[in-house]
Length: 394
Image 1 (tube, rainbow, N blue to C red):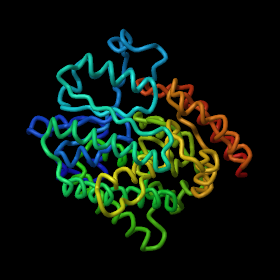
Image 2 (image 1 turned 180 degrees about the vertical axis):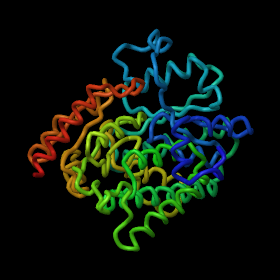
Image 3 (image 1 turned 30 degrees about the horizontal axis):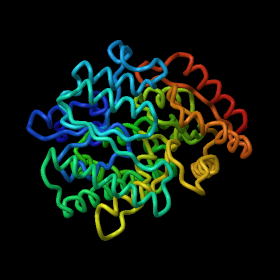
Image 4 (image 1 turned 60 degrees about the horizontal axis):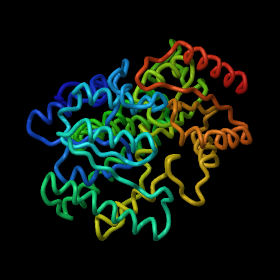
């Protein structure tokens, strides 16, 4: 990908038009590529080993190859990504890292290993309960073992290289979080779909290159805020900004690789101002890395992050958290984009939705298939939900 052509946002968007063009080009030039199926994979460790880490996503269309080996109730992320692997689309990846977040992913890791013998598979088993000394001791042993497996493939990984990668990812994460802050406060600067394109492209590009583009992009948005009222992207003939009057919506869920869902929501007449998506804000919720042993730092970071529904942190209430985030974003409602058959999320949903109801925040639950186009039914339901929010606001 030639990042010299086009604005940063144009580059980010073009990456999302073909998720793996950058990785294929890197592999063709001799760089090792590592796919990771979940944001709980220690990407810093892969980067320190010289790999280009890229998120493993499915592809649009049917899954005839995967359907022969996976159960029908396996989620579309598992089926579509496995089908892509079986068809050879991920042959450029030297290594694929799985996180044991659910039984489907554990099963997928085993099937991937047996059906792709020339592609190394590493499984990261984070503790289900993420706090306490026992969890830290266990996870340190897991990461030490993961490090040894990677070193067996790529050679020694010095502590200094791990610390450098931790620092690089921290700088990048800080800018992504700042971008989310800007979106919440100045939603006229960038659309929800554009924000998701920035975030998604960061999981497909070389981190240094993405950071090099992200820095001036965020600085430019901040400069607009510093001049007073930021420029509206869709001004009226009278010079007003209609987007400021649209209902503000918070989106929650797991993977959302099809940005058409965000586009359809905004076309229905709302603004997506924040999210708690696995492919969005939750992936960048890691705390700052402590000083000292870099492997201990990875333990602290990944166990200290905001947990996804597959993990449990004592004292963390996902319902109270979502209410707090929705209020902080001044969201009029919450849309749940839940991948069909994602058991951890559907287990949490009743409690989370009850918390929203108690707080007086409307919610809309939509089951999505990652490998299928946005259905017209979704557009209809989104329009009806937006009309509800507008009526409540009026």
